[in-house]
Amino acid sequence: MTASKSLRCRVRYVLLLLVLGCTISATADDRPNIILLMGDDHGWDETGYNGHPHLVTPVLDQMAATGLRLDRFFSGHPSCSPTRVSVITGRHPNRCGTFAPNFSIRPEEISVATIFRQAGYATGHFGKWHLGPVKAESPTNPGRMGFDTWLSHDNFFELNPVLSRNGGPPEKIAGESSEILISETVGFIKKAIAAKKPFFAVVWFGSPHEPYSGLEKDLALYKDVVKAYPGKTVRLTSNKTGKPTTRSLGDVLQERYAEITAMDRSIGQLRDWLGEAAVRKNTILWYCGDNGTPAGGIVTSPFRGRKGTMYDGGIRVPGVIEWPAKISGSRVSNVNTVTSDILPTLCEIIGRPVPNRPMDGISLRPLIEGKMIQRPEPIGFWSFNTGNARGGKPYIAPKLQQGTTPLVKMLGGRYTRQFVNFHHPEIRDQDFGGVRVLLGNRYKLIVKSRKGKPDTHELYDVRKDPAEKQNLASSETKVAQGMKKRLRAWQQSVLESLTGADYR
Image 1: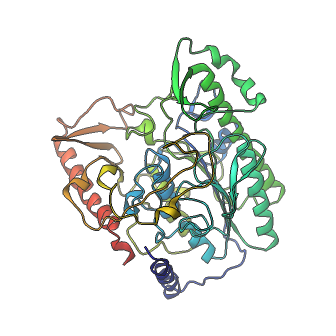
Image 2: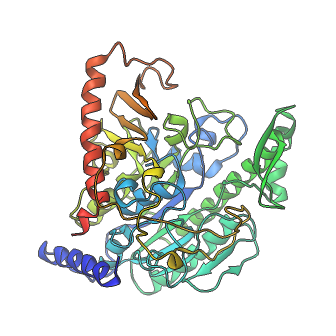
Image 3: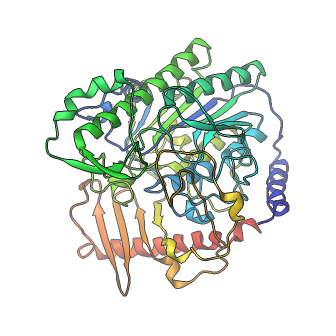
């Protein structure tokens, strides 16, 4: 896709804003500041407030006790890159071909950061990007997606991370990674305040993604966990070689939980600083995970499945919104909400239109105001069969898709990441395959494709059966058929976007 065509798409969006009577420039006013926080592979139950038997997360617990706790919050996909696209665009990731980890976003997508920058906000990204390389020449780096400044990584990172500042050469920064990101975020906010601009910051932590590591003070909190799972082992990445290794489950969990506690503490440092700077009251802090807990760390979840699956263990994640100016006291919501809701919610809050293209998220402003008791539309989830995409014409030149920031985990013989995205000019019958889901207020339909065999259907009453044990597809046939029809229609819309129709 040429740079000129991408520029034309962005120009059309700016013209849309002008037609709607919006101005591009703005100054600090009563609109809120916004900080989006995301843990990497942080599952629903891995917080103190959700009853975890080991974890110490006092800051997230306090946020849940004083803000809006979203008990049925879902990631847009059971893996990282796709979910992050849903946050950035408000759309299902399959619409732009971000099917799985290391599939990039497309340059024509309209980012929430672009919208906020056009509204006069200072915009910054800190941490994991994973939507394409962060290097300067990448057409999908944070700067091309609307961020004024960034200190970011192509993928994930551990202690002493190697990060790129504004697309420059990777540099190693000594320290605990979550605290490094928060320190950078605070510096960014200070500059925004000095410039009298509202701020929009996206902080995507590298924790608690494996391989794990932790500070001694955090590891000490979980010394009893080491002996709590005798005789059990897990496979994960070796911090020494970057290749798979087998280790004691207790040792692994000690390190994983140490990372979560360090992340929690860093969020507390941010909240404290916002209070000292007298900007916390009108700042929205929105925390969530990007997918469920992976196999090597999931031992206490009450849900079926794990990262990579469409059961709730793979897509149900922590979700908390704190906004002292508008949310007072403890509130708990059981309304179905999802990461694609973030963009439309924030757009409505600051009075900006959502992009004029198919959206999958909805505004949760009524929920924040206590006026929404159930979701008006179901949520669609879909793991696209990537075999139907690979081999197509590259959407972005492969050289521009080569990452530069190294990480511990080796993939394809490299310690850096190579991204892909492909043109998909026409819709074929096989494109409707993969595991797809429609989640309504009561029922959840899961459809799975098997090569050479008929599709299988699972239907769960997730309000009565949150563990998804009793398949009702054969007894509630009318419900299943109705949901199947709606799911197919939604897939059709997504595939039309995948062809590039939204950019024309």
